[in-house]
Image (cartoon, rainbow, N blue to C red; front, side):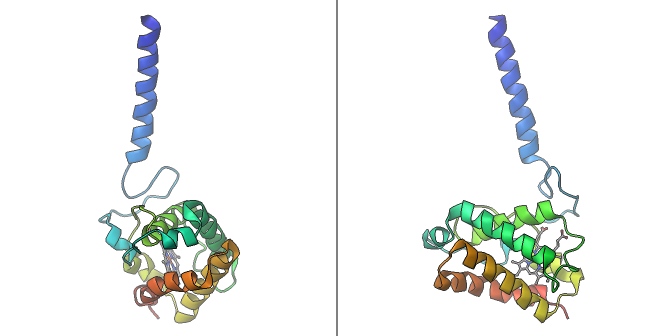
Length: 169
Ligand code: HEM
């Protein structure tokens, strides 16, 4: 009897810790830098999701997306054309929000909880050349994952209008 009560206590303690970590604040997660409050919405992702599963499959599911985001983040961090702009980035947050955003847009059923594209890029003074460099880095990551060329282009077509939101000079 006493042992089962102890088990129950242990389970409920574990659950409440996990729940607190899971819910946390909606703006940043454990291990990420604090950000100013904003309205959390999938509309912040900047594009509507594809319907159906074809795009998700072409990107090898959420694992494929995660590998693409890893390569993409490593690319923008080290490419001489983008490294300075990303120098002060919160890599943990960038990795998480990009995974959410790509998964949401590709129809993977995720929610995007990051900031809106205009607001997050406003103060970075991004040029069109830098935007193009980011697209090239993403193309290389998708190519490495083996995403068919036609599907790469369908995804890029969704992201292309974000040039308006990110390029400010
Ligand atoms: C299609 C184009 C782009 C997409 C989809 C995109 C996506 C994102 C996302 C999801 C975030 C994180 C949002 C958040 O923290 O709430 C972010 C942040 C950021 N992006 Fe972009 N981005 C794009 C273009 C660019 C370009 C062209 C540059 C610069 C060359 C850039 C530089 C940055 C920087 C510096 C941050 C902030 C990182 C931080 O403060 O921690 N982005 N972007």
